[in-house]
Length: 392
Image (tube, rainbow, N blue to C red; front, top):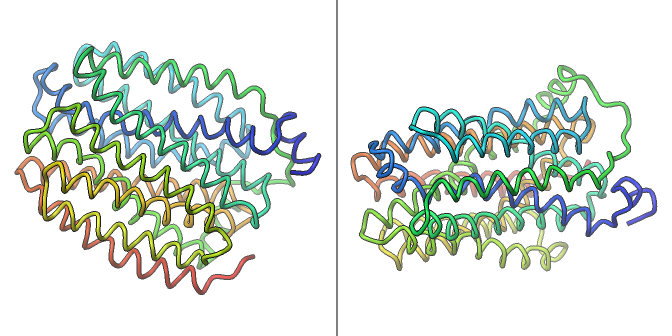
């Protein structure tokens, strides 16, 4: 990293800056996946039907997706670092409200607001990397950001399940508030990246909409959100449905995060050796195999295999799509990345909604058939598109 880039990171070298940003992706992922292990416990404690409590996930993902665009526009006006700090402060305060929620209605509102606030963490960190790291070296730090999210998911699903079962689900939610508030304070060490004049929101949106490759990546993001991040929400519920405890269900689902961490390391090693299109193809094959495992067996063995394979699929596919979206419209990068996040988590919310309906009728196997049917065209189109794209 050159001297200019070091000054942009507030005196931190590239590794230290990316490490701090990765804590942000960790925190966002921790909060996002925490509820997956707590749905059944919350339903019992508040004496509400599981289908009603599942709306927590649906509304959270919807707010998380919709607010990506708003935070992206705001980061062009306020700056990348200030946007992350404001958002994480709001996330911490809504986390406190979630932990103290007296009923489901208050919990739904507080978790929706938390999702809206945490929406700033990942895309703004991606844009920061895009602003400060050349495209030739960008996949590795973006893979580090994804790894931070994977660690957050792994710690969240297992830790939140154990805390929720042996202490209380409110304690698990309070922990997120503390992490978010501490991180908002720590991010003061980063300075804003140097930049040219950024386009106004309308002009930036037109730049994106006029670029056919950008439109393709955004469409792929929606389907990937469904496939890679949506149905994993119901892995713990599936296991609890077949008789596993909340802790066992959380432990099995944690394999998704651990697998993502390990395979993200492999992706970094393969960067430059395998083309981005081949990395995407490998990820798609792993995701297809994951849902095939879940279709065959919804017990511990089948869901463990699904978690491991889907984690591998995420590591190969998601990091490649993330890198792609930071390059398709460099003059409107924040808008492109924000739309990517909006569609990614809108897809996640759509999958959560579909899954919520299907689990209400105990149609777990059908849910994973739907997931597999979505994965095949995603892999084919993404591989084809990335093989034809050339760097701008």
